[in-house]
Length: 120
Image 1 (tube, rainbow, N blue to C red):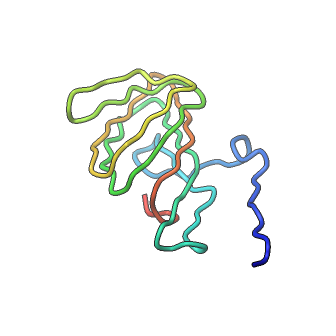
Image 2: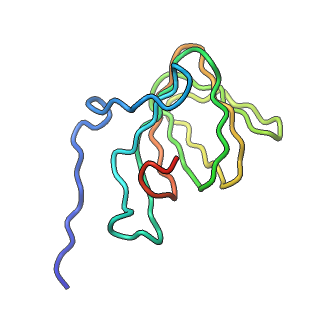
């Protein structure tokens, strides 16, 4: 079997501007996805940015993990659990979870989800 090369994205956090996905303040974009290499078990990773303004309510159709990199998020779920998320915090959102995101200024997170590219 031939060696398999890794994929490298230097400075992805500083150079990658996620596209606007909702309202006028929610941005999300996949930097890489494994869907072409393994379509049955695809995972996608990228950045999510939320700026002050309208809350974003999102229902997950896949499993996702998110690491807060900058700023601050207020994250809540349908059970009433509410967390002020700061850099270094890690979240797991199971498939079916309905999550509300807000921020007093802005927040930036890195995510990886069990889904194909651009299927968020």
